[in-house]
Image (cartoon, rainbow, N blue to C red; front, side, top):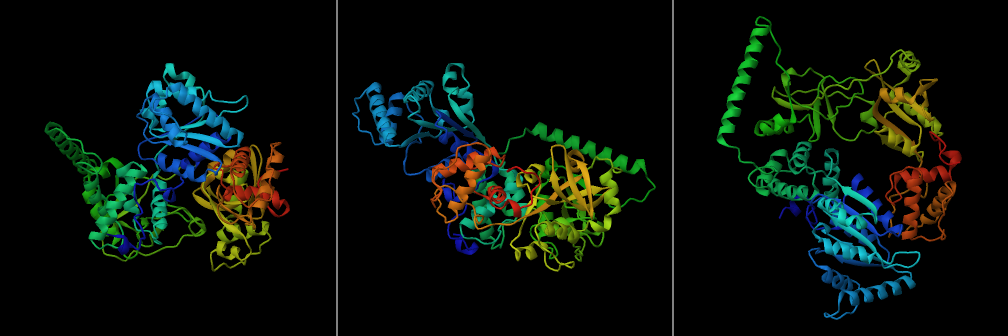
Length: 627
């Protein structure tokens, strides 16, 4: 219907559990890591819970696709069964012959014989039960008895229970404590955050063949608000929003299309309308009138003879919900202004280098905006957004504009400290170009004193890549010298942090090295930063279980060296070009040992660590985590 119109090859927001459309948010990565770790440890039970529609089943399908051929899987999708049916279903899935008249003991004996034969052939058997919150108490007890099928050293059957949060309540019952004590890995899968909606939507669009964003930023905000970040609800609403935009021949999906679609998707209103009694409605109306009269009295009585400028009205999220039609109208006007792109927001009088954070929505008339206000895209900050500020004039006629202006962040630090004095004395040496040139020198790259192109583009010619940093934990995991944007008396300065110890750090301020406590550095940091790294031949693209790559032998060697630094056993096969289960387990162990995000995949953080191991003399680091 709308596929050809938007340049799609298939529906991007189908609710079918297709692993190709699985967006790996941080929570999904952690959930997959728990599943992989639980399977690698040979434990009894793994429990994965989450609200309806958060992607548990899709995650399970992705896990099945990653399992090697020597793993035998019994998948039960209908958990509303009794003990006899449970054993029969497991036998059916594992292709074990039995008679319908067989007793539970006979079924259990046949299952045990099959598992022992598989163990002798080095086969692993996994039982996965979806919608496990539907399992009865007697069935759960029967599952516990299945874990008694074991050898002297190993369990014969791995069991994964997937269900809604009620499953945790079920397992917390006192009469099921024996089962709960056998859980070796447990994870609760939450909804998507607002900051993840854009990546989620654009990821699914790209898988379906689209090469450009189709949802405006206001539409994405509406999408998250109306669905609470639940992926399945997002899919249903986004699909209908695309249809609504198609019916209006719009090039993109705006907030109005999302709201229109919500009325078709959700019962009675945008989410789930509640019938409000007439008496309550009248009560709200009377209360509103009283508040309006009080506000008017205060407005005119407090300072009756003073001329007042047009007010800036801060509107809380709840108030925005109550006046959606007016807000949508204002948003539509904003989206028609040529000076503002579809993902932009107007920000009034930002300090140099100051980004527009998320927060309270403010409605401002365009004639209240000073000339030279800037247009800033609310995207993850790249080099140009971190260290430059480009002004764009607003030349339109007065009309309503929408901006995001939360209360300004309050920094708490001693402005007269050694670092503060160094920042004041070196203000002319803490600019963008000076910072990039100083950090580039650590990588033996001589950047020109006049940069016309973005510095990160120039660095590519020397084989150096940029990575943005937005949190202290991320800075520690990357373990590379970085440019940090610090505050000093409401002025922004760029310094190089090049060494971190337990409680202190060394930073380069202009041409001076300053020792500073971690607490002061973090209290001044705006959470904007950028670091460099040099990708090697083994650092191109994400690799995961099931992949084949000629780079894997080098990765295996580096993984073994990393594990040996922690006195942990390594891989036996260092020449294979296949990303098998043993490598996935070794990667997970390495990531855990070095405090990286553990997902059993070789991605950017793992490459950074491996570069330290393979090229220690050529890799500047913040601290020596590899001896």
